[in-house]
Image (cartoon, rainbow, N blue to C red):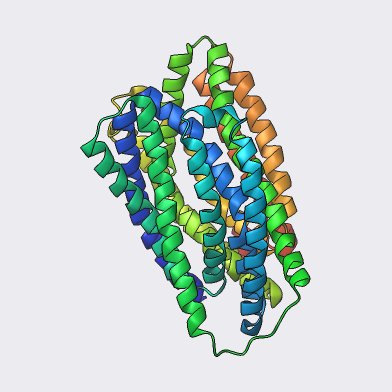
Length: 440
């Protein structure tokens, strides 16, 4: 457990400073892009994240799971096969995306966006191998450094470019996306040099050869369903801005006003509300190899203890965070815009934020337990209910944005309950948390 806590602490500290930088990045974007420009930028961003997920093939998760479950002598051979597999998949994906970027309207916002996408694909694909390996051997310091580098590089580039030059709104959006891609290149360079340096040090260590077919089969068994789940999640998040804005227009808002309100929701309220989520993301990264290792050893008592600890950690930071958002929301939102609507949205979204703090570590448990398909089914059901509610209530003039937020809250509650129930059933943990305390 010392390795778990040490890794989590490293990731949490780095992620905290990274989120502080993210906060500054969003403030800078809000200032430079304005309410409508920020809304357009936030509408494009989910599509970029979708490309990132597809390009990574969720190799960080499958490789970290493989490494944590297998002996060290298998690692080098597995990584060689993983590299060959990644080269082939990246070439295929580049060919597909050359066609897609010319068809999908969201990439036509600026002619240079399609080139940014094509640069991003190999950068993400190959850095995923290094990221997964360092996760699997519990070298979380390198993961923490990479995550922090991404934020600091993006902020520095934004400040330099926006300070030295002035742009139209359309060009400013393209510049914001360019700095995001450039920050991923910085992370790629750092991870790959750390990866090859580490492998060079391990050159004299005994290594066993593995069959490429067996390695690919094991990696795909985790990567494929996880990628499908993440792609579904990313696709729905790419659709969500347009669904919300369509519902708002149907409720009587103008297109410009719907963009502005979505900008306040996604660019302000959600930026603030998800600030503490760096802790849950850190838990996810550490939990996948830790849970996988305990499952391989059939250590169910260890899994029970881990689930209790994760629940307490989430409650200990989640509840105070929600209290702060609710009572000092106006002060926080006014750092972006002088808007009472953004404050109201932040306060109304408290269930969405609190339950999502639980979703990521619970999802890590499901992946470690080999229950990725269950996580996918839960995501599908919660999204269907959430989107249906968002449109039905959001398009009603009486509810409008309140209806949108109610739908988002409902989806977060459903997926959290389904994840938790499934994990408890699988490992024999009492569904009612207080009963587990009595049994200790």
